[in-house]
Length: 146
Image (tube, rainbow, N blue to C red; front, side, top):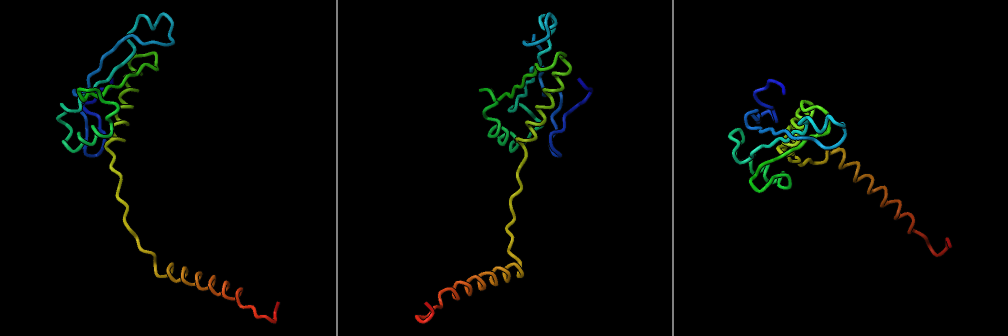
């Protein structure tokens, strides 16, 4: 694990390492005898409710957006066992945690209404007039011209 004190999620939010709980267990999958001897699987747990580094607004947003990933106690848990080393799995789980939190906390900017420019309005009206004249010319047939 790198010697960080906290992980920056957004410009206004950072999660201290002390709030992340890591547990290690034996991993399944490839690795032969190595898998049976070494605890390479990493489980990261983050208690959303008990986190002092998040404000209430962020907590409620995270609860809403991550509702399918939280357990009944409001704890977010991520597992990593793709790599053969514990360190690689831990780094992978931390990166997934940061991306998950960043995506969940991202607030989409509201769309600003814009008005069409004067030129755009004129072009639209000219096009309509031209189309109208074309249609009007089609309809002007006398009895003599048939």
